[in-house]
Length: 218
Ligand SMILES: N[C@@H](CCC(=O)N[C@@H](CS)C(=O)NCC(=O)O)C(=O)O
Image (cartoon, rainbow, N blue to C red):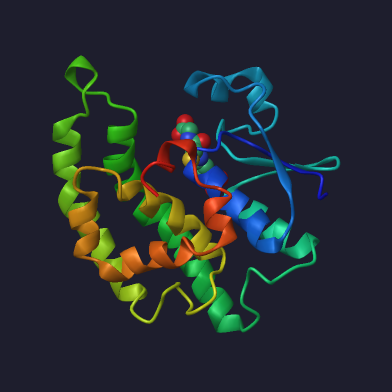
């Protein structure tokens, strides 16, 4: 029993990243969505008391509260016994930071916000996915996958055979990408990215954090 609680729903990509860190470290965690009922509840007083920017996840451990997924993963790594989630060699550790930051600042705004989310939460006419938004984003999504494909050339993970926190960030987005109409073709053109996800499926941290809506397609 670790007494770690993560606030946020299981379908959220960043919540999944934090959950993967817990499973890879070998600790149990609870998920808490008690005060969350929909996107608007992220800006409720109850949630803002945990996360002043109205995002998820938040980690609770004893009387300690922490937001930002990278900080949460690093806290889990530093606090509990278990396999290291960060490389010990300084350049490898720096490369891990590089890919976490690149995911947050470049990959997620394109792959998640301009492709996956417009399908998951359609905002177009009649509640359909907004084709203009999605079509305009496709060349950039393909370019992101090209960059990731090159980075994962040795693979299967960013830093070789063992996943690190950077991989915990990428996996949830790629797992959703497979399920969009264009996803399979985009991934066929980026086989190292597809291999990254396939290598993850062999790990407990994949199956134990698989969101409900991906269970049929896994
Ligand atoms: N920088 C934050 C990003 C967290 C984030 O954006 N989480 C998403 C869920 S995957 C969220 O809260 N979205 C709600 C929104 O954008 O309003 C982190 O690393 O935790």
